[in-house]
Length: 450
Image 1: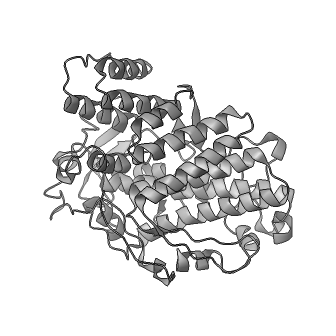
Image 2: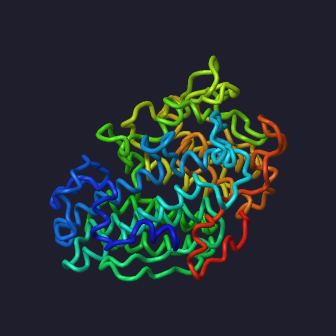
Image 3: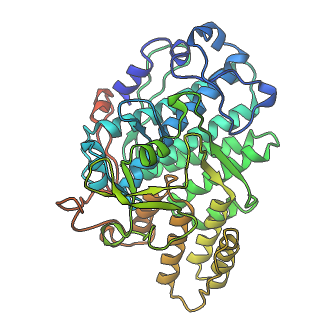
């Protein structure tokens, strides 16, 4: 993250934080877990005002704003700014690229170069949100601790580590930008396993500091379980989320207050027609359209996308610029429990969990009693794909099917001829951007394994 963080934090960190699109100061006594607020005049936010207890709330809000841009994207920037959710959706089987940006098409074909500018933006935005969350933690500690803010910031950091581990190659470095404006502390590369384990530590800290706030504790529990899935600790993941209620949800919030706060998924799919819902992508993909499933609403098929070549199918899950995007939910908790039952070969329990969830959206129950272990696995991962569509989980799930369950990449990823010509590539991770080479510990990707 060397050169990238230098660009972001060239000046005193607290002073620079005021220019990162921070939100209005929140009342520390009424902090809502997923509430986003309005953009403020940067002239009002000074380095001095941030270096205070009130500044903790300002920096917390700025962190959530940066996280939203990193994951969901925004309407700001030339051609809008895609986040990790959409880019990983191209790398997996959720979307076909119906636009003209070559850097985005690289993700669709899984031939991503380490000079890819769009990937570098996503990479930098993730690190920006992480660094501001870390600075918020440092500031909270300086003023004696604000437990619920600390819990939320630990979870934000945990989710960012999980996001890197699920979507980027092994070897991501995590540098530190001191809150006092000191020299950048370069981080050494972390393997995929190390990233998941670091995430677990942050989620444990988040649970410990939740101070009786069940909403924050559940945010951390779902995140920890997601990291444990990545480590192949399926039973432990299920135990972690056992107490999370099914109706729990923590959203990444968006609004029309500024272009930066708009939901980038909606902008780039519905408004700009650059992402089109796939259907059996590359032979192995889920048939997101043909299933006509209420969990993946869509329309279209009568016009072309922005490239005037690709038939365009619009997602309707996020149907406005202000649509929230779930970061964690009780539905995901139940899916994790279902996976543990699936791994144990308990067909009845898998059916019970899935049928209870399916009933909430009016779907008929399924009889899984005659399924083999492989059939049960395929059914479960299809259900996960439909419930968690376009939330940034699918690429991690496909990699996990290879890494944890032993399938071949050619069995789970889009493979063979690419619909615009050529072939799908063999890579299943995003590379570390070349701009990271300024870090003296930089080694590039340690490997490109799932």
